[in-house]
Length: 136
Image (cartoon, rainbow, N blue to C red):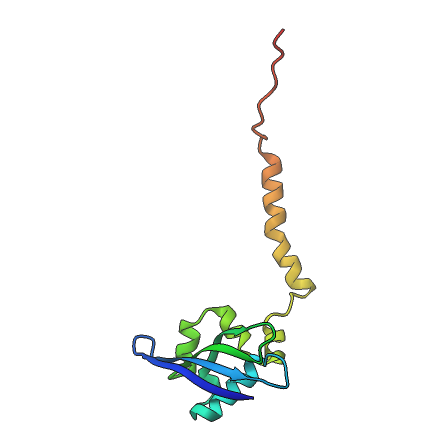
């Protein structure tokens, strides 16, 4: 797997570098974001925690992908700036599963209570439906 930087620009407002990279993956499928981060960390001499793959574009039948990457000065700046779903996508699989785990039985019961309260409240109110009048 090889990485070729196509375009690099500095964004001083967000304190980050925005990089367009072409990843060549001849013998394998499209690489995951973690391996792209590791590859770019070694090539750019940055820590992988500061590198975030925002978008990966792979084309059918092609052995290369375009990646939109952002390199932040600190990990904290990235967590303040990037949307939650981008941060989650750039986590290792173990951490991603722990973060997106479905609620357990106790948490489900608490989540259901507000819905039941709304149903009970709605049942006590008149329906507001008009009555039909017979016109003879």
